[in-house]
Length: 72
Ligand SMILES: [Zn+2]
Image 1 (cartoon, rainbow, N blue to C red):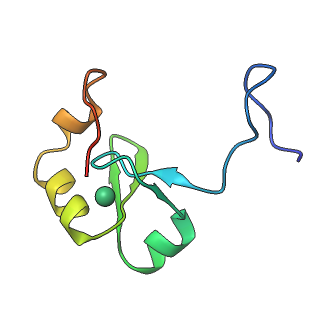
Image 2: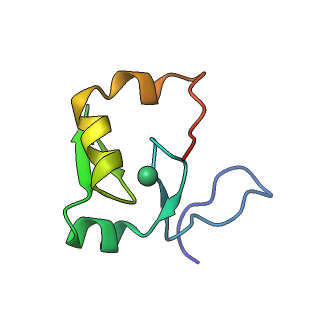
């Protein structure tokens, strides 16, 4: 637990990333090993499956909008 925590009371940084398309929690190491990883504007994104990655790669912007609600 030596990672810098955020604000007090925040949970520790998880070993998971959130799929920006569907909102699922994914393990970055697993996603990377399966090629379900994209880098966009210097930020890494990880996906639950090829469908989400392809959707994101096709047009990332909508998924990064603050108002976007991930759904399956
Ligand atoms: Zn997904």
